[in-house]
Amino acid sequence: MTARAPGRGRPPTQAPADAPQGAEAQAPGGDAPAGAEEQAPGGSSPAEPPSLLSAVRCALVLFGALPWCLPLARSRMPLGALGSALDGVFAPMCHRLPERSIALDGVVMPLCSRCAGIFAGLAAGAAIARPHLAMTAWRPILIALAALMAVDVTTQDLGLHPVWHTTRLATGLAFGYAAAAALLAQIARRPG
Image (cartoon, rainbow, N blue to C red):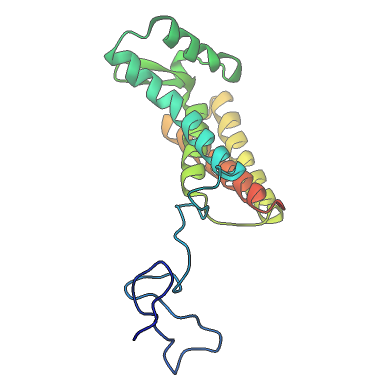
């Protein structure tokens, strides 16, 4: 009679003789050790409530995508007071000058192109959340990216070049990505 792995209905396998010491037996066709519990994406078991890290990631992705989705939604359907309220959320965050803003499907975004890039970067950084660096490593990266944005702002405002939406989006995207990845790395390192 063959012994069965608990809850699997398959016989356990043993690590090959040439496997390193302490290597656990692998379930056939799987990556997890035999007897290991199935886990949901993100490392939490299905019964656990969402972690702070998961909640922050979801919030950043949704909030980062909102200024991009809002004009697309407004171009396809009347949003009325809801659209105005969502648009108003971004008013205190950005100057919203029309010549520095992008129109999507004929509707101007609720943010300038640089802020729209920052929001897109927040969403991308939260969705990807890589690399996992310590805050001491992120700090000079964030400073360098903020300085790069400041150089773009200064050269544009001094009239050295016109409004280039590409550089505004790129510098904002890079900074937003790094800010989100750094924040998530910091939350992941918190005890408990």
